[in-house]
Image (tube, rainbow, N blue to C red; front, top):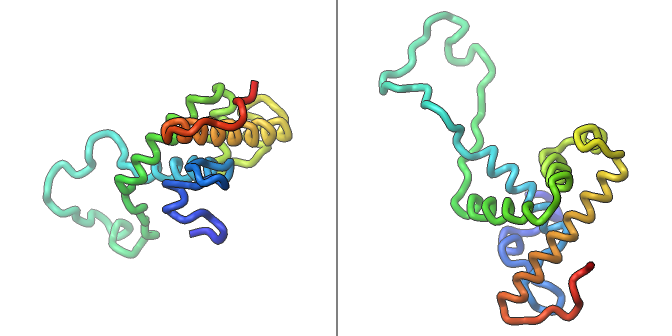
Length: 159
């Protein structure tokens, strides 16, 4: 776990200062990064490589165990992480296509310069879109959670 990152329970049920359940822009960024990681942990589509139950055998010395670098596989995604992935992907629908690309590229660890090349904008503009998109998702999702809890929002939504 990253130092200063929210705990697993705060990702599931973050609380606003007034006691209602809600999200901040940092929470949204963490959830999108978790969604990217969860997608990488899902099994790949396609046919399985081993169609039989016979063990693999060594054909040449360069295929022998320990000759090459070991390939580590990621642990499979948990059902809870897949559920959060589905919810997070729904959040991205709240944004225009350009903002979706910027959020997803940044969650994949791309630099602002590469993101700017993909989006056709300057790096500073991409940073501004990123911050505005995170804030928009946080406000919209928090407002939706408050309404589901039977509370009314104290401030009207931004125009």
